[in-house]
Structure formats: C-alpha cells, structure tokens
Length: 52
Image 1 (tube, rainbow, N blue to C red):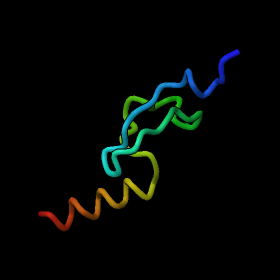
Image 2 (cartoon, rainbow, N blue to C red; image 1 turned 135 degrees about the vertical axis):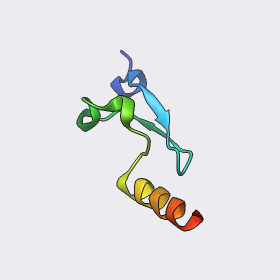
Image 3 (cartoon, rainbow, N blue to C red; image 1 turned 180 degrees about the vertical axis):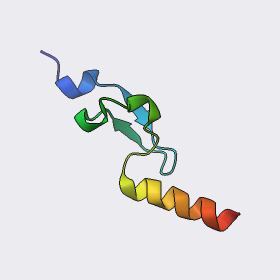
C-alpha cells in the first residue's frame, strides 16, 4: 500500500522555492495557488512593493 501523500499533486513556491503539496482547502482553486503559505505570499508582496 502506498502512502496517500505520495500521490498528491505538488508545486514549487514562487517565493521560497520549496515544494509543497495539495491541501484540501485549496481544492477549488489549486490552479491559482502560487505560494506555500500566507507568510510567503506576504513576503512576496512586500518585496514587490519595495522593488518598485
């Protein structure tokens, strides 16, 4: 029997470049998920805002 987490889809976070796997709360909008956490999303926004 294989472990269930091995079969879940995964992506790479655009901010920290770490891989992360599908979560049930992302079921409806998995295609739009870009960051592994709220912290990475916030950091990405902060760095984009200071870069301009």
